[in-house]
Length: 330
Picture 1 (tube, one colour):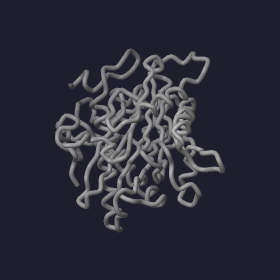
Picture 2 (picture 1 turned 180 degrees about the vertical axis):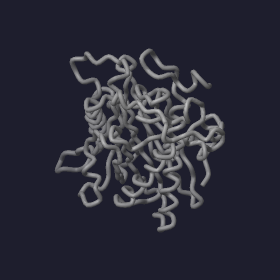
Picture 3 (picture 1 turned 180 degrees about the horizontal axis):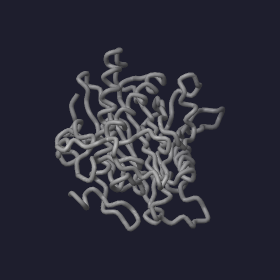
Picture 4 (picture 1 turned 45 degrees about the vertical axis):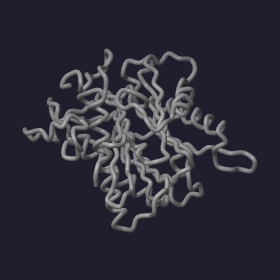
């Protein structure tokens, strides 16, 4: 398994995928959309105790819809679910969607994180997330920014400002796997009060500083949390060009959650809505059993790296938010 330094080190290293971000600095929130040149197979697995979702039931392997048109990650708690309506509007204008007679219905599963306590403005009379969803969809491209943008713009962790992260890798058989995460965890991505990331063993090159593991070791039981604020949830998407069924995508999403546990301490808590979508473009042959096992392991690795990259790339924080990692250690 190798990284792709000559490429983007983004989920869009899976050919055909595009990501768009929309950010509202007054809300201190935003939306991130993953879409593709054509519909793609998807699955989902939820391990947090406080999820907020839209159209995730249809991703069950035994349900009739086999492909989706986009996946949405949004801030805004339940208000953010309306971002999917803006994405669906953009897809419909592009002639995309599940055929229902003469109509086409875009399939847009979505998940939200809770960022309402970060000091942003919430006295609006009309839900702003639908427009942010459309803006993010219209901005979708192979190259996109990470850090304090999109769904990660208002995110926090117990120690530092959260953010949007991404990473990718190429497997020995040539398949690509990538991850996209919006990190708003109850726990911390760093060890104690220092700069070292829990994900350090999985770092490729110096993509989040090259500091290596904390020489002090760290005590994961004593890791800080932001439990008192109840403002949590890490959302992820893993994608591959290997051909997978809905069942196999669901298993890939399940395996990818290991990346949360490697990079965030604690993770999957009662007060997190931790969720991973998995997507397959099907451009490469289907893997055998051994290939599926390796793909799941690779997905967890790129998720862990993407989480650390989100914190590492976050910009200096406005008042009322935890400091950015770069402000203290950059």
